[in-house]
Image (cartoon, rainbow, N blue to C red; front, side, top):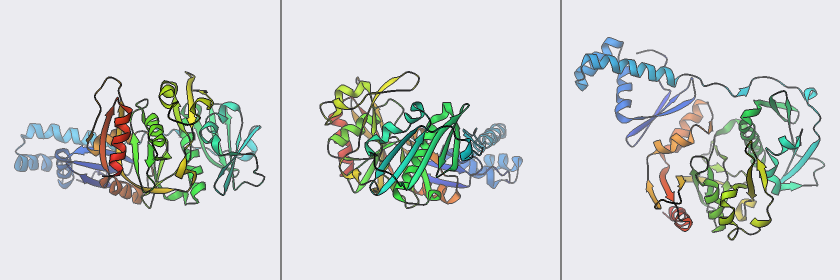
Length: 379
């Protein structure tokens, strides 16, 4: 059936299939049985042929077959619908810049980056996470970024070239774009060859890595800090980039820790008590930023990822870790991540997912959680 709605790629993993729709750049996980019906749908010449095929091959009543046809048609229309664009399509020339009164420079190994901020509020979106790389000796930086605001729009420039503009309430898109541009500058790579950036924290033992994902407030960053205190290294916190070589690359930002975890980490993290407390967001949440240590001082570090762990902290629950399907991981990973729309990258991403082992870690005991992650590195 030629409808133009078929997925460009389909990748089977265990008893599920991940479908990628090029038009919308959407990834949808479906059961094996639904994938069978979708395959039959596209192999049929028209609606009548599909209903007859259901009757002959699967013994499904024609009346039920009509309902299935309508449901699949609706599913495919929805899967191909392009979501609203939060990036503002406009061009801002350097002459439009407001007075950029704040200048901060950062050293990442041999790379010097200078960022010009229009105001302290805009500075607070970026600076606290990378403040541990601040340097006051940067007369000739390798790259200059500028971030400023006009009306309700935030604008991002690189070496006086407009990179993107974003609505103020969607400032996290600006943060994500800045992080990708900074990561690319640090590693000196091709900006067009990044496959994805994931909203997940990643820990490494110096050889391989484990990505930690979960809903906001579920303890990802706290667990990352605990793991770092136990001797592992932080590859990235909340922003983990994947390149064409299928390696995860370091993003040397600090781990953001909310007030509720201060007492847990104070005795475990050297100097935690002396870290500055920042108030962020409309609710003025108290945060401290814990700089990465040890191996990740090498800003160019990168490695493969073999495991993704979905984390939930619940102080009243029993602690356990178990294997789960990639579907559970994708429910959390996809909505908050950026994934390239290039066909080559979609195929690489699906191949990469097919090699990952997925786990569900529910914990109330910090020692159990740390031990469980360490065990995965040794498995």
